[in-house]
Each structure stands twice: as C-alpha cells, then as structure tokens.
Image 1: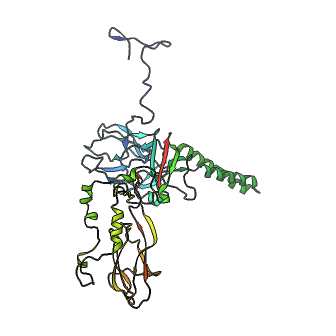
Image 2: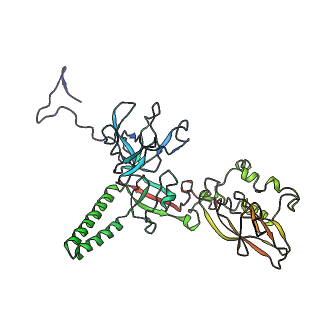
Image 3: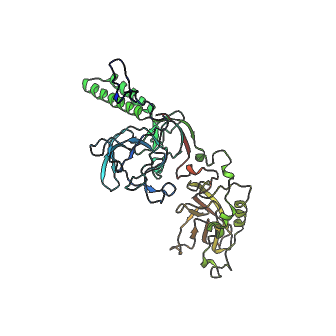
Length: 441
C-alpha cells in the first residue's frame, strides 16, 4: 500500500520507503497454487466418467504422470500459450520427458517435437483437454513434496498399456531398490535415475583416458568422459524424489499382508451376476442325448470346486476390484481328470482357476498335446472340442475304448482373479506390487 498526504502520495526517498514490500509467499511448497494451461498439443488418451461432469472430455495427462512446463509451442515457441478465457499468455503443463526431445503426435494427428523439459512434480488428478465453454477454471494440482504410491510394472511394454502413472525398470537386470532416486521417462512415467550406472561408465571412461596410447585415442576418451558427465548432470536436474519402499508380493503369487482379501461382495450382487447365476459354461446344444448325456454333464470335481469356491472361510476378494482380475497367474500341468479304460467320446472337465486367459490353454493326454478344434481334426479322434474360458469348462473328445489303463488329462494355462486381496490400484497385467516414493523436487 502507499501513504497519502491528502490526495497526494507520499514519495519515497533514496533511504526511506513509504510503500509496502513485495508479496513474498505465493503459496505452499507441496502443491503451489499456480495457474497453468494444459498443453493443447497433447494427444487425447481416454475419457473418464468419474472426473468429468458428462464423461465426454478427454484426459491428456493422467493422474500419477510426471509433468513439466512446456519449453516449446505457442505464439513465440516458448511453451506459453494464449488462454482463450482471459486472452493472456500462460505457461502450459505438458508430460515430462526426462530432459530429452521426444517426437510425438498431437491431438489432430500431426507430428511435433516435445522439446527437452525439466520436471516439476506429479499430476495429483487427471488433467483434461481444455475446450471452449469447458470448466477450465479448475487449475491443475501438481504435487512435489508428498509420499506417493505407484503400481510397479517391471516391463516397459506392459507399463505402457495403462495410461495412469506407474513405475517400470528401464533395465530389468537393474531393478529398482529402496533408496534409488526417481525421474521421468519420455512420457511422464516414473523410472529409476540410475546414478550408479552412470558413475560406472564414468569410471570406465576415465580409465580409457589414462590408458590412451596416442592423441586420437585420448581425444575419443575425453569425448566419452564429457558425454557421461552431461548424462550425470541430466539425471541430477531431472530427479523428482526417492524410493522409500518396493513391495512386490505378486511376484511370489500372494497378496500384500492385510485384511483386504477377506472383504467380500454383497449377496445381492452375486445373484445379479451372470457368471454366478449361470456358471456352468454349458451350451444349449449340450442338452439332449445326441452326445450321450441326458442333460447337462456332471463331473464330481465340479461340486467339490463349488464347495470350496463358496466357502465363507476361504478368501475370494471382490471380483474385478480386489481379486487380481488383470493379473495373469500361470498353472502348469494341472491334472483335471482321467479317461478310464473302455471309455470313448465326450468328457467334460473343469478347472476352478477361472476365468482363464483366452488363448493360454494347452491340454495333454498322457503327455501328448491335444489339438483344439470344434470338429474332428484329420488323423485323430482325440482333441479338445470346446473351451469356456470364463467358466473353466474344457470338453475333450477322447477314445480309450481299447486302452488298459486310465489316461491322465492335464491342462496348462493362465488365469485371472486368483490372488484375493490385491488393491485395485495394483491390478494391472504385469504388475508385481507397488513402489512408494517421497517426492522432493
């Protein structure tokens, strides 16, 4: 404020100020309240009906991705764009890229370069494409000082199958460990800032300098040292936090410790679920005597399995939420039944690790793989004629009429929903657990 003498402001002198000083604190450190635009070049990724009033707007920066101020684009190609509500220029948030240029495709399908940028934090919620007449006044919240958890999906190609933030290993032979530092990859997913690897390369490059036998070798060795020093500098400026914990129980086929696996779903939901109401997997054509059965085929293990599956003392989780519905669990050479001597024709077998992953099933009879075909294959009468992957039904046509011993039928497959107690945020193909990171940008 200013001091006034009547209608005339009191003027400052060289050694006396009559105006207040600057507004120093503009916000808090963990989530500064700064106005950003959302980079209008970013591709539309998905719609999310929980976060948008009508479920029609597009998410362009998903929750959990690392973000940075854009360094190019806009009228002056400086990362500042014109806000169509206020007609003023503001910095735009874009996906962090680890400090390297990234060739990308914009929302209209045109190529552009997302120039190297410096990460400032993590998107606390989905950030949507800004549109005319949209609710654009809700500013992005960027976190840089909280403790976060991300699903740990070691393989990059599997981590890229989900849009929300995740953590993966750039080099599977050097997996993340507690204490490692964290940075962004080229698209805002978290990876390890591998200082140890860069230091190893620097040591090797310095050794080459010491061993150089001529001027050309020395120049090449020094250039190599400079390259790795630049890489070390890049990692330092891109770090956004430090790993405090790596939890990977799914790699061992179990859920994290706790009570979540005992949380069940409501009886009313069970009765309204088609998988439970009609879970046999049988088809209408299976009714009748044309296949040797007077009705739906019965197999004793079906009853045993259902008793276990509905046992209140056996944890199940909530299907699709807490049972690992996207986690593929392998089962190898699981005995599903036998064909007795003198028997031939259709035999219905069941696995109770269902739903099976479509296409993952192989069936063997005494170690010989049976072909999967709806009609008899040429040259054999032994084959798998039908599979219901959702219900675990496997129909085998087998002729043991001339046999003197039982034929053992085994199945190898993968199945979903086999680990009750998996938190929903961990439930992704390839996930082994979670990485917890203390942000400290």
